[in-house]
Length: 279
Image (cartoon, rainbow, N blue to C red; front, side):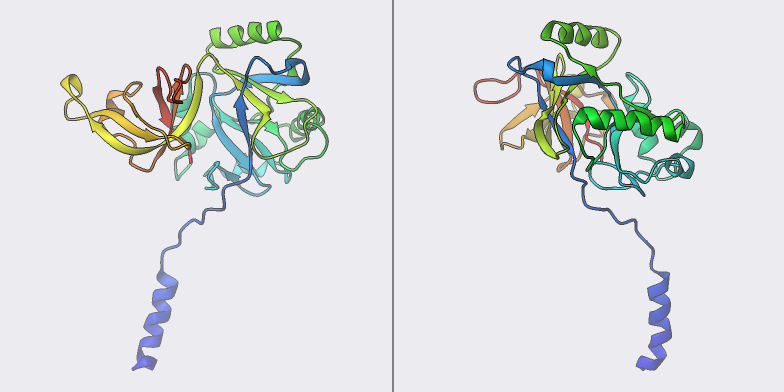
């Protein structure tokens, strides 16, 4: 009996569908929040891009989660063997379209021609951040393809100069600024060697429930019930499109929301939904 079944079993093994394997989430540097007491003269500053974080490990381009990004072969073939960290970017105010492009299982060649991989760090690189910023400039020049760019880093100088640049970037449609400690060695995890400065703050929380809508939102989402990493729970009811209210983020999804400041109990003031976090 077993002999008669063996050819069938072998056939079943070889006919099983294949599935893409997720690598572990790469260890990356995560930004803290800028505060007035920071000595800005020690930092280099760049625009905070409204893009999708992407880490190149030398052979594959991955989301923060470790899932591989299905970029066209020509896009990744030009990248160096050296690991890179940066943002996939289309331009200011284009996040939703960009997200649609980079999440497709089958990449659209013409859409990807518009995408830029904007580099701001060399994972595991030696020297100070200033040293690595110069290495990035040289690497981009050497590769010499239009879709690989460095994010310009300039001295912050002082608080007044920083505030002027923030106003200029926001007025032009940008999100804000990033400050990177110039003499910092490479590190990973949440750290004040990298700071974000925005008119609004943003952070992430997990969806733990859906509150039904009332009035004009009856039959759709009224609010998401969220839990912060610190364990605080609150309702988030603004910032959703009609489509998002009809098809809200699933329970267990990590979402990004923005807020003005925190209450004395640590809950966000004037919180508004921004987006579902990318993979």
